[in-house]
Length: 227
Image (cartoon, rainbow, N blue to C red; front, side, top):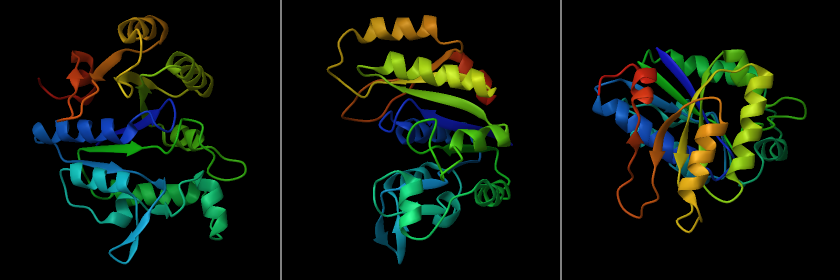
């Protein structure tokens, strides 16, 4: 089983979009892959429970059928910081709770688990703990989604510096073009390719139609799939 954590430079970097594309890629290569979004804030009542759109997207993109509460065990209605949303309903997120939820996903015995974070990298889950520390405790390989827009250089480099300080293994980054009007997109891309200490794995261009992913060989090698 291969396990990856998909994080982003900020809350609108496109983690769900990229994770869905990666799940579709794995499905095309006949791999059993599941998307896992442990924490989601911003949900509506449906099917007798709170559901989050991003988590539903991961369910649809996974190559095996999984119950919603396995894919997204901690769901909160208001689209605010999850630890604040949890406190408003008398809940408190902890590493122990996340460990149990992740064990339920691992029990599915799939080939791949792609875990999508919430917000950016240093997301508080309670008054003292960060989701990034839980990722470190699980020893997950990390993929960084860089939302290509003004300010992305700073966000990406700060995130990479925290990866190094924490000692997590980032296997590479994916450029997700979220702003069609971003000036000097190519120049920014080249700056990041030179400045980030891990390889560019893929590019997701901005599109109003069918989502696409320009894949580099390194991504296929990391996923251990043949082109």
